[in-house]
Amino acid sequence: MLTKKADIITALILMLFGVIVAADCLRIGVGWEAEGPKGGFFPFVMAVLVIGGTGMVIRQAIKGTGSVKGDKPFVGLGGMKPILIVFIPACLMILFIEVVGLYVSAMFYLVGYIKWAGDHSWRTSLLVGILVPLVSYIVFEKFFLIPMPMGLFGAQILRF
Image 1 (tube, rainbow, N blue to C red):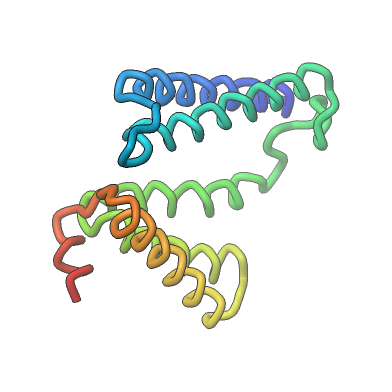
Image 2: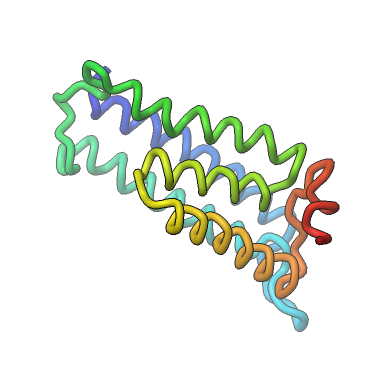
């Protein structure tokens, strides 16, 4: 498959997800009330950004103005290894969200990805892998009062 075709297919799939999320946010409500934003406000903004970004990707792919020209193969020889290095841990993270919750899963994913795929030091990996979920927890759970998935054991883990 050529890069142009892969770009268009991927962008259309992501655009479809953006449209689905935006439509559901409209159902929930995207306005701003006296207490602050309604539940669908921030996801709606993100969905609109996804739709706009994927539209630009499609336009670039059709015009051939992207950084990678469309006549090159999407995955060359030996190209599946880097893709699987990203794909398999991401799938495992999604599965672990059901068990230990979003924050703990994100921590393990980030530490592992930064260390092995990014080839950074343990110090950097642990610092980023712990701080990003911690800040996300504080922002979403404490400031915005938006509960994220805790999984079967996530609430017990975060209680300590």
